[in-house]
Image 1 (cartoon, rainbow, N blue to C red):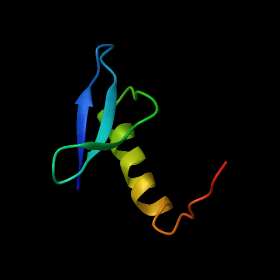
Image 2 (image 1 turned 180 degrees about the horizontal axis):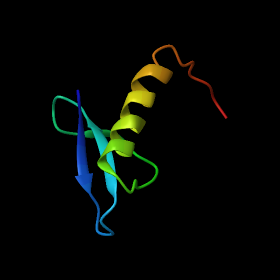
Image 3 (image 1 turned 60 degrees about the vertical axis):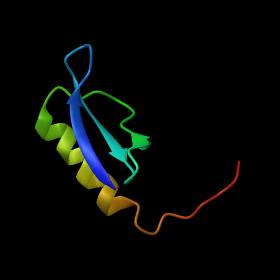
Image 4 (image 1 turned 45 degrees about the vertical axis):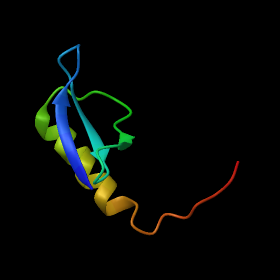
Length: 57
């Protein structure tokens, strides 16, 4: 899997997490004014969810 950074139609930075087959697995829920802030969000996801439980609602 890999994260990709891109600018949306509003000029804000966003990210996608793509599987090896190219399918999008996850996307950022918001746009970021700077590339650095988008990269920080990626790092937060990487660090913050390695052992996240799966729940049903």
